[in-house]
Picture 1 (cartoon, chains in turn orange, purple):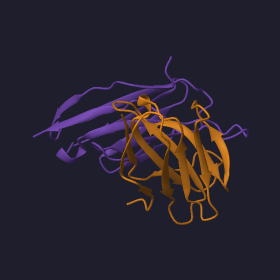
Picture 2: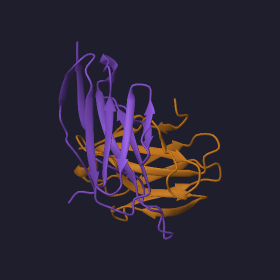
Picture 3: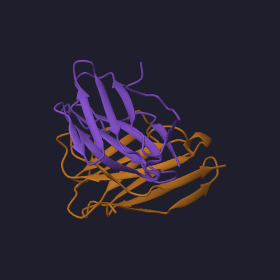
Picture 4: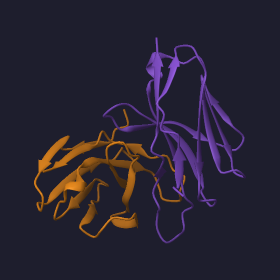
Length: 114
Length: 114
């Protein structure tokens, strides 16, 4: 296994609510990236955190936000949930940000928005 | 044009056969390339990195053609356990302005039949 953990494993929310997802990176990894995977699609990059700061962002609205803590664990927060936010949310840890580093994925959190 | 394009399949292949997948990518500045494997309702797992010189890992061979922006994966002597979705993944050049994250294709679904 990769050593990347995520919680919770499953979550059901209603439209308009807020959600926080958590990720613990692999030991020694200082970079966490978050991805959204809708059914039948490949994962889409949300953002990346490096040394507690956002280091890059994909095409997601500001209601998707995050944090990284001194121990390199990370949170993904989504406000004002919409039905289309239903997806598998994956975090991936890696070492460094030069590009090309292998990213190791956690098991994901399945979010269902009703 | 989509950033990473793959034939979604499914590819139905008898056990023991050889199967090949291809993908194309649009960003000529892309820096690194990977194949990930994803089992149903699981996270993506790194299968192998892809290099211009070609690389082999047991029954798996990957090849990159930068001029044609084309990546391939060959699986020889396929096993039932090879049944999965294979994701072609590209890591764009790190621009210095922030990470771009991994760019995934939609995946190719492979079914190995006994």
